[in-house]
Amino acid sequence: MKRQPLRLAILEAIRIFEQAGVPSPRVDAEVLAAHVLGVDRSRLPLI
Image 1 (tube, rainbow, N blue to C red):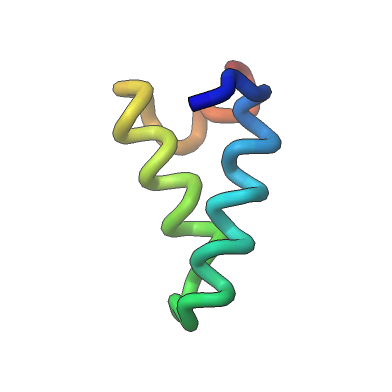
Image 2: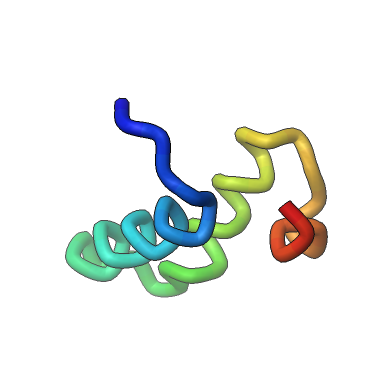
């Protein structure tokens, strides 16, 4: 997998979740990213 800035990875996840019909794609993408990184979702903008 190619390295990319966190912001771009979250945007790509949002796009995929939207296409899949996920009801809250941004929240789900951010929660997933926070879990993978081991941080609270509120800290994502600091990374």
